[in-house]
Amino acid sequence: MRTEGRGYAKRVGTAVAVGLAALTGAPGTAAAQAWADCETFVIGDDFIRCDGARAVESIRDGLGVGHSGAAPLPGTASALGRRFGATPRFSIGARVGLVRFDRNDPDQWGPGDPSSGWSPVFAAAAGLGVFDGFSPAPTVGGLLAVDVLGDVSTVRLPSDDGFDGASLAWGYGVRIGLLRESFTLPGASISLMRRSGASFSVSGDAGSIDADVTTTSIRATVGKELLGLGLHGGAGWDRVSADGDLRTTPGVGPATLLEFDDVADTRFVVFGGIARTFVVTSLGADFGWTDGVVFGAISVRLTI
Image 1: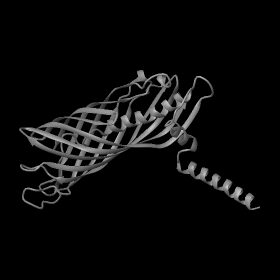
Image 2: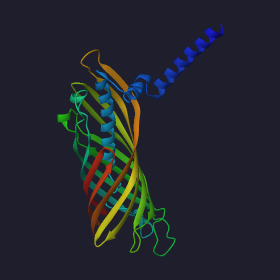
Image 3: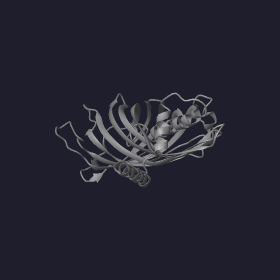
């Protein structure tokens, strides 16, 4: 009787767990196992499934970094703050760039190496200074200044590699000033951005992927004008996650459908750049790197 009772309780517990997973969108056991299996030696048609899983990860990472770029407002490390005490300072910027990442063309899942290439990036950003911060010393200002930020960006994806259209994302966040650039001191700030709405659809002979990508980015930036040029650089951290489904069509056997939720990775990003300011307009260039992804952009920014 006890054995039967324990068996019944186990079945009920399993049913409840499955029900909660379905309600909360937790990844299914099959999807989790599929990803885990690809860490070990695979043969035959499992190559196709594992290449599809790797494609999810590499395209996810490329889009996450492509949409995020370097600093959230190009060419500046100082928080905007306010003008004349009560008037917010406002800035708008645009960047045009490229991001390079592995695309894992579904036509090559199984037999070939991952394909990689450059994708164009177009983005616009805006910032509003809401708090000027503190000035603990005559030449030290902008401590804990606050800007609110927003942006929209698109990464163009090539139809030759099986992609259906571009990826469009929008973001929002905040930037906290550490120092405002002065004659003697550099500017420094930390920003936090959340970007969502990005998605991609890719298909080929071996299968297809439809996924949404969400990115949380932190950027720490330091900059100083020297000899008429503003130099800036920094480091950051991205958490990029993907939700969607992966379909594979192996040469032998039935097609496979894997639904995945919050397949995520964290990445360390480094970046740098130069800028030239003309009164209220700044022209600049940025470049950066993270594991497996390289990006660069030229930008223009207006601050009033």
